[in-house]
Image (cartoon, rainbow, N blue to C red; front, side, top):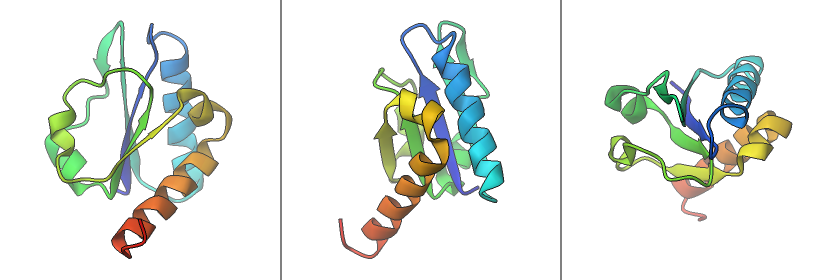
Length: 109
């Protein structure tokens, strides 16, 4: 698994699934394996397991909301971005996260 992501907006009814679909599509087009969980009024959809989280290179959070079950991501790089950027420019968001994680690994953070 290259990365896992969580999308969440205040209601969780419009932007949350739109951002999830955009990130999933962009990851596939970039040749990456990703799983995107949605959090909102409907609860957790497509929930990321602790194993999936630990096997991911990084965690992308597309939200400024409080995210449930963050303990799953202990010890992993977590990058937060605006949910609207996930919808508008998902490839750029993923690329920026990949570069940030690579820089951290190289000690350039």
